[in-house]
Image (tube, rainbow, N blue to C red):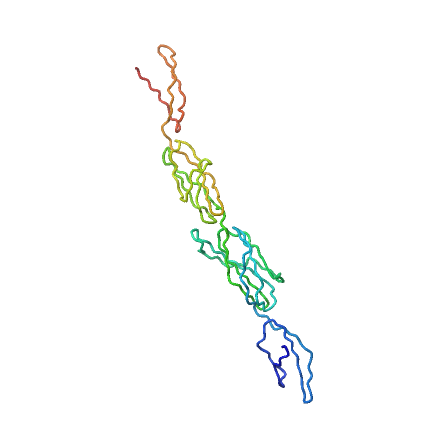
Length: 289
C-alpha cells in the first residue's frame, strides 16, 4: 500500500479494489481516539492469480526433414506461478506445386512439462513428415487458467521419396517397349525429375511418367528401374521386366553338306546366331541345278 490511506471511518469492513493480480500488499490498521492513534502490526497478503498474459510465440532453433526444435520463454506477465507449459501442434499438408497449405489436421498437445523454473525452454519434435508445414503455439498455465501464444509455422525440408513402384513394361513390337510408371506414394517434396535405368545404366531423364524404348533386340528381356528425385534426395524402385516380341531369325549359316554315296548326301546345320524367338521348326529345301 506504500503508506497510502485507503479508508477512514468507523465501519469494520472495507474492500480494496483496483489492485494488481498476484502482487504482495502490506496492510496496517490504525485505530484512533480523541487523544491519539495506535498502529497495529503490518500484514502481508498476495492478490489472487489470473491467467498469464503476453506469452510470446515459439521460435525454431533447428529443423530438417523430420525434426523441429521449438524454443520459448515465459510469458511477459505471468500473473501467478506458472505450473505447466504445453506445446500444441497442427499439421498442414503442402501443395506439390506451390509452397502453400492445402489441408489442416487437428490440434494436438505434443509436449507438456511441469518443470517451469527456468527462463528458456526447448522441445525436440521428432518423427515428422518431410515437406510439411507445422504450426506450433505455447500454453502457459497457472492456477487461474492459461495464456496462449499465437500460432507460428515452420516447414520441414524435402526428403527422398518413399513408395516408388517399379515401371510397367509393355511390348509394342519386336524392337520397341513402352514403359509407364506412377508418382511415388509419398513424394516427400516436389519431384524434380525421374531417371530411367535399363539393365542398371541410366538411359533417360525427364518429368513425364512414360517412355518408349526403341531399337531393342528382338525377343530379349530387359530390366528397368525408375529413380524419383526431389530436392532432398532420390529413391530407386525395384526392377520391372519386359521382353520384346519375336521376329524372324537372323544370321542363318548355310548347312554343311557331306556326300555319303551316289544316292545320299547328309546335311548338318547349327542354330541361327540370332534366333529372335523360340524356333518352331527348321526347313531344308532341295532343288536340282
